[in-house]
Image (cartoon, rainbow, N blue to C red; front, side, top):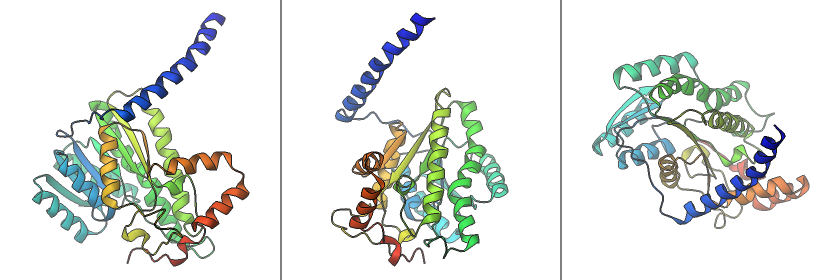
Length: 302
């Protein structure tokens, strides 16, 4: 038994070096992208913002069917018509992902009307945009229900069939604020941190499930209506991401079966700094970059 343990102990660093080298080589070589032509994709919050761009990007890459979920029929209908004009079959269902019963009911309706979902994109999110003491209790609950619990309900609704088919992918549009919170968005940061933990646990739990994978995307501030009014001190150094860029990189990550994606790549530096610098230094970085006060001008979606 002791020789078995010693062998595993000696082999482990070799495995780590091999995996790091393999990852480095893959960065230099052209990626092999997964064929999406047989996939049925469901995008929550698919009527506008990043969700609409995700639907467009999946359509461009030739998925079989796209299903959109959201709470505003006007936006859903407009996006559905646009996707159909691109030549892709598209359907929409009005669904509040924060409502468990509604999620399960609409998931059943999707299976009956459209078929099995093989790629689930949890994109729906809201932000209250106020400090804790200025926040309305119902608004705080709404953020947690949609941004975090909604992923529990949608994943529970569609993952079992993916496991049966041995074909599926769970995608989460998260935020870099899950790793580095800011003042003025305590509801959003908390819900996204919970969502990140959910996806990290789910990703590890799927390691022994053939054909079923997960991708978590953590973008920097993206120029959508949801964060309208948010201001960074040095916008030329830290420009907001374009939603079409986030959508394109997300679909590519799914095609490459990439578990975690930080956007832009400079966010990796933030993660490293947060793990090694003292709290006082991190506070000065927040003040210098303007993230400490960036929500002071927040207006949100009108």
